[in-house]
Amino acid sequence: MIHYGHGTWGMAVLFRLKGSVIPKALVWSVPCALLTIGLHIFLRDTMVEAMGAAGAEGIDTIWSGYNFILGFLIVFRSNQAYSRFWESVSLTHKIRGQWTNAYSSLLAFCSPDPAKKEAVNHFREYLLRLMSLLHCYALHQVCELADDRLEVVDLSGLSPDTVEFLHSCESSDRAETVMLWIEKLIVESDRNKLFEVAPPVLTRAFAELSAGMVNMCELRKITEVPFPFPYSQFLSYMMVLQWLASPVVASQLISKWWWAGAAIWLLSTSYWTLFYIAQEIDMPFGEDSNDLPVELLQHQFNENLLHLSSARSYVLPDFVSAVSVKRTTAMSMTRQTLRASRLQTSFPKLKKALEQQLEREEMAEEALELERSGQWHWQSHPRRTQQVPEEPQEPLEDTEDEEVGIEPTADPVFVSAQGIKTVVGPRALEAASRRGITLQDPVGLEVLQEILMEAVDGSCEPEDVVALVAAAAESEVSTSSRSDELSLNELMRRLKDLSAKVQTSSASLSQEEFEVPWHMKVKERSESLNQLIHALSGTLRRPPVRWDV
Image (cartoon, rainbow, N blue to C red; front, side, top):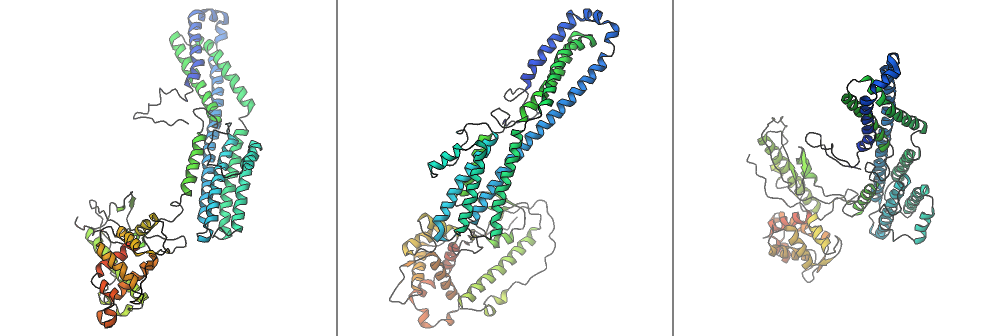
């Protein structure tokens, strides 16, 4: 397949020889034009005398009718070849899309149960190799290529007998054999409870695999059934007859030799070019320059499979719903952040609306946390009287020159496949994963302190981090004992409890509770405690937005 550009004036393709059929056409048209010139100069008068005046009458009409029929046949042949070419392209990409979709669906259906992790990994690796092999043998069915021309994902895990059996099959049976293996693998995995999805949804993967195989059979139709032989043979005969008769007719009908040669060269080049274009694109699977790049198609399919097989691909991306509620304008995605672009609204009213929304969300979140901890009730919330009332939203005036770059106010929060928000945010989770720690693994306080210092990223003093982690370890044990190991989830829960207790009024605590060691460490660090909770949960506030235009 040739990838090309037209250039500024659309003429950049004029002088490219690779993939061009014009040189083939010139092999016929140039001798035809030279023969026309020779007949016109040396034999025109002799042929006129031999044919006589009556013999030359009506030859132009007959010749015009012959060229009309030839042109009609060539155009029809070219249209059929063009249709076969684009049908091949469409079916090839449909097969790739359907099998990729089936593969991604099966990855999404896999169970996240840690007890089944090893079996699920075995299924993913096995399916990866079988899907690569399936696409490879499907391309082999339509292309006459050597077995080592198309790459597949490493097959060292398959038994030698299996590979030998595949090579012993007929070429038309290999793809069907691998398809059967994939279906058997899915059935056995479902029997072993490796999928957490309803059976009707699981059949979607079978439907995509089957649709891809049906399109594969449609694609084989193009390679196994050529353009009808009688049509192609008759068209070739007419092209040769036109090439032989054109010099004779032109030398009699055109009075100037140079004009006769130019006209025949142009006419013959056009006919033969269309003739060879039809032959070139009629069968797009091969090794010619204009054929489909089957090796590249197989490579891209393998790259898609390997990309989907990486853990970062089939884990849900981070998402913060509160941020998405505020972003109601068109967004542009960059590597660093999401930015609001070209706000068609009035800026002061937008600022007021965002401030009121943020105020309501903060009050609701704070009250909910206090109510869950059992320390306070929503009706007696200290900020209850400060609730911002709902105001009717007035239509915002359109502006043409105002543009605001709004940074997300928080880091994303991980959401599981079941829609449950995890406790720990991405910064802390990334720091823990680098140390090989999961959210449930108990670790030492020193390790937790290191993880939190990476998560806060300088927004909290190291001394405060050390003191608050120690306070969390002491908060639920007696003064004579201490928790030397905590998990990230447990640490997060204890820090939230500390925050809820500190936010209550001092009068609600007894003197003994007020003077316990953990409370003495926390009461002077309430702001740092909030910063630490936000950093650990992935909702650390960014620097305030500049509201000036």
